Length: 444
Image (tube, rainbow, N blue to C red; front, top):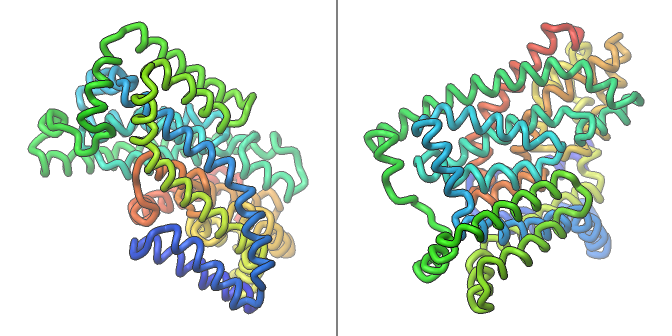
C-alpha cells in the first residue's frame, strides 16, 4: 500500500475511534486529526487552506439549513404543534412500543421518497422524538430505524448512490433502478422484521426499568426544551386555537416546499422561522428568548458539520480517499479475486466508516468493476453487489452530513449511534445482499 493510503487509513481509524469512545469533542477529532495527517503527508498550510475551502463549500449549505431548522422545529415544539400527533400515536398504538417502531419505518420510507436524507431526518425526528421520549424509548433506536428505512429507499434513481453508479457503469439510471425495486421491497420487509425484534427488546427494557410502558409514559419527560419562563409563554400560545392551525399550515408549507425543492432548504427554514416567531410571540423580547433557547444546540451542531466539511475536504484534496480505494483491492489475494464484487459488497457497510460516498462509487467501484470484468463477472453484478452491500450503511457514516444533522436534531452522539446501529444494519445489509443473489440479480 502507498504511503498516502496508509496515512489516510490511520487518520480515519483514529477519528472513528475517537468518535466511538467519546474521549474528545467531535470538532477536535474532525479538525486536528486530518490537518496533522496532511502535514505528515507533505502538504503545506496553503494547500490545507485550499482543501478547507473546498470542504466547507460542500457542507456550508447544510450548516445553514441546520441552524434554521433547529430554530424552526424548536419553536414548533414550544407551541405544542406535535402534541396532538404524540397523543394520537399513543392512542392508536395504545403505547405499543413495537407498533411505534414499525410505524417509524413506514414514516421514514415515505419521507425518503424525495431522495434527500437531510429532509427525511428533518421531517421525521422532530415529529417522532417527543413520542420516544414520552414512552422512555431509546432515541438511538429511532435513529437506527429511520437510517435503515431511508437507506433502502435511497435506491431511487434521483438519489445519489444510483446516480453515481450509473455514471460509473455508463448506463441509464432508470434502467439500473428497475431491477432493484424487488430488492427495495425485500429490504422494507426486513426492516419491519428488525423493527419488531428491536421493538420487543425495547419493550422488555422499559418494562424492566419502569414496571410497564404505561408507567413510563405517565412519568415526566427526561428532557425538556423549555424553561419555566418559556412554559408560561407556550401555554398562552397553545390556548389560542387559530394560532395552532396557522402553525400546522406553516409547518405543512415548510415541509412541502422542502420536499418540492423549488428553493434551497436553508432559505425555506429562514422564512419559516421569520414567520413562526411573530405569529406565536408578538413581543420582541419573547422572540429573542426563543432564539436564545434553541441557539446553543443549533450552533454546536453547525460547528460539527463545518468541522466534518474540513475533514472531508482535506482527505479528498490530499488524495487520501482515492488512494485508499485503489489500494484496498490491490492487497486482496488472487484466489478470491473472482468473488471480489461479493466481498466488497459484504463489507460495504464498514466501508461507510472509511470512505465517503464519492470515494466509494467514483474511486473504488471502477477498480473493482475492472478486476471483476477480467474474471468474467458482469459489470451490472458488480454494480448491484456494491450498491446493495453498501447502501444500508449510508446513514451511520461520519462522512454523511445528513447524519450529523440527524444527531443534532435528536441530541445524540455519533460514537454511540455507530455502536448501537452498526451490528444490526450490517446484518441487514448481508441478508439483503444474499437475497439479491438469490433472485439472480447478482451472479456468483
